[in-house]
Structures are given as C-alpha cells and as structure tokens.
Length: 272
Image 1 (cartoon, rainbow, N blue to C red):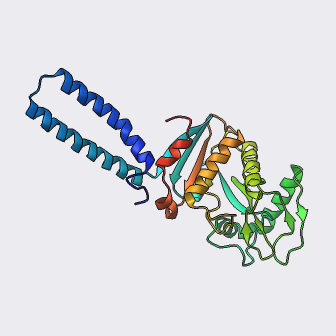
Image 2: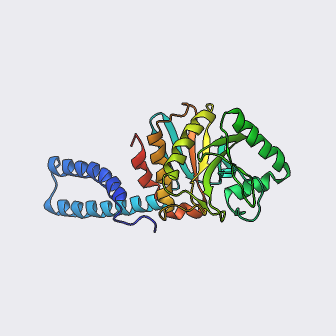
Image 3: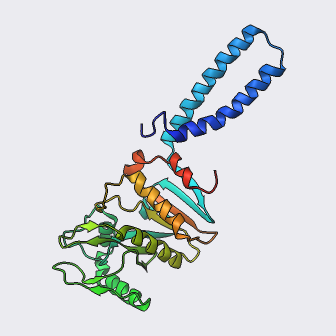
C-alpha cells in the first residue's frame, strides 16, 4: 500500500466529508425527538459509517491513477500511460549533445534510446535538422572532443522540435558518458526547459514523462514522487502559462504508478 492510513492528505479529505456528516447528524439528534436507545444506536451507526468512509477514502487514494490540477491558467493532467501514445507535442529527454545514434552508452530502454531506434533510418537527416534548427534560432553549441557521439554541446533545457517531438537537452555527460544533473545544472535546466516549451507549444497540448526517472544522476537520490513534484514546482516558479486550449500532460509510466501519491499532488493546484 503506497498511501498509508495516517497520510495527511487522506486525513484531510476524510475530515472534509466528516464535517458534513457530523453537522447533519447533530441536526438530526438535536431537532428530532428520538429515544435514548435510538440515539445510542444512531451513534454507533454513525461511527461505523465514518470508519467505512475512511477506508473508502484510503482505497480511492491508492487506486487513483489520474489527477487534474490548475496552475495559474494552465490545465495540468497527471496520469498513468504511455508517452508514445499521448496527445499533443511530446517531450523526449536526450543528452546535451543530441546524440542520434546509439554507440553503447545510451540505454535502449530509455526514451532517448527508444527515439533513436524509431529514427535510426533517418539518423543523418535528424541530426542535420537539429544543428540547422538550433543555429537558425541563434542557439550555438560548444564544440567538444569526444571519443564517441556528436561533438556539439548545447545548453541544458534547449528544445529542438522534430515531427511533433520536442527533443530536450536534459542531461550532461561526463568523460565516462554517465548522464548527470549535478549542482546548479538542475535548476537552470528546468528553468530553460519551461521557457522553451512556452516558445514551442503554439496553442497545442504538451505531453511529457516524469523526467529523471532513468539513469540520470543527481546530487541526491530522488524518488519518482519527488521528481514529479519537482516538475510541478519548477513549472509554477517559471511563470509560464500555456494557451487556454492547451493542456500540460505529465505521463507516469505504469512501472512507477505504485510509487506515486496522486492525491498529494492536489496540493500544487490553485483549485481544490
């Protein structure tokens, strides 16, 4: 059970319901003539009903796999699903070099690796598009010497659009080709990313995964819940508002669903 009985969000939701029931019960006892025996039985029934409601809230919280939030004017839907089947433009995290071929250091199970596999027959066209597009936007990369992979490094958070995908420069690679977001790279990456998404959304919905749940190395060991909350927190801090008809979809892979407290995410919403 991912959400425990003493979870504060479960308790909060229960007391919202309890307040209504307690008020109705108090009115009934106070204004309707009933015997002491009926009053006693009614009290027991009331407690049983409250216990059943608490269990119901707990079960509901554990089974919930979708939540809708609103931050400023942006509708946000967080749900379990497959990013490849999601609607709108899809954010795909890559490394800062936009490597478009797998030379052994990119996991085939990562979204970066899966994207490379999908476009392996168009590898040169894809990379030429990335370089030309970013250069035309005055985003110049820094040339680095690497034993494998591409040699132009772009700022973290940079996005290049390609056939409905928003390719995100998300991780730095060290000399051993280990993906990381150490130090101040992490906040700078997220701040730049939201600015870039604001540029590219064009009134269309955006779908993105929970970033950082692969082999990305951070300064601390973040759990999926913390990485998801980081997305919401940095979006709020960015000041970005998507178009009214657009929705920000955050797609949680089914393997992570057991680790996400969807009810807790309501705390980020501007509405209840």
